[in-house]
Length: 111
Image: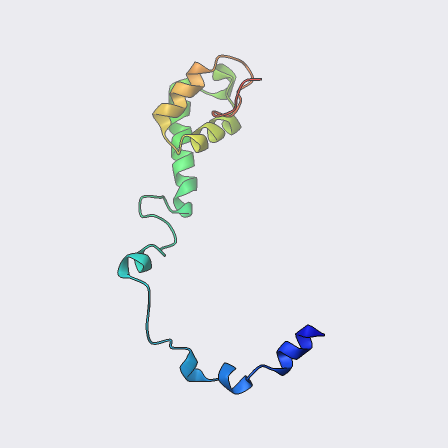
């Protein structure tokens, strides 16, 4: 019942008063306006991910060889490139550093 009293006691004219809300003033600073950008400028756009991934796979395949000779399938190379933010040199170093036939993701902890 108390909700009904709250609704009954609302001053509808005060709630609908357009002067109560002032949209002309902006309390945000220019720095805060700049912080509302969708992504930092140094972060690559998602449309370039596919191109970076394909380029990275080609570079790694040129170094390690094909799947039959290296034992590395494209899924492992893709996961490694993704974990190292498309850094081919770090990915190759990690792939050569992991000598087991099962290649976990680069940041997984051994069990």
